[in-house]
Length: 149
View (cartoon, rainbow, N blue to C red):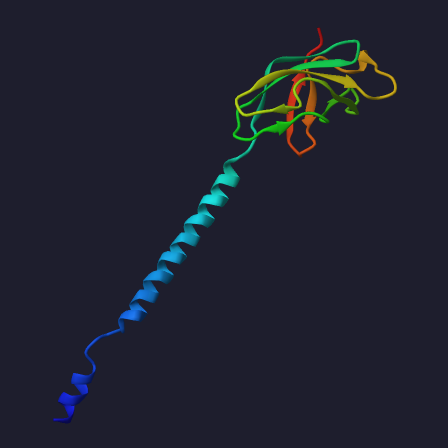
């Protein structure tokens, strides 16, 4: 007889309010996980992918003419950027942004001019096909070769 009374008192597994609270907590936790995954994914896939269109050319007057295209999903700022070219002795020869759009938006291409920024420019010390590296103010870098006419 005692056994029957013990079993009769334990009818439901959880009170209804506890079940409701567990469901609400699960929905909130799922929402936080979805928000975290969405924001981290959208931030990580937003990046500029800059490429050189055509052949960048270095002229005897100390100017580099180059066309860039942004195939990425974020803009890149080229105003204030520099191009460093290696001379025959592997020394850096700096060129600074002179003209062209300040910002290259996704899907956009534009032509730019970079001017020599050192003391004396020696056109003969830079070989045809010299390695050049674009360095933007926001940390983006791109290496390419420059041709001489």
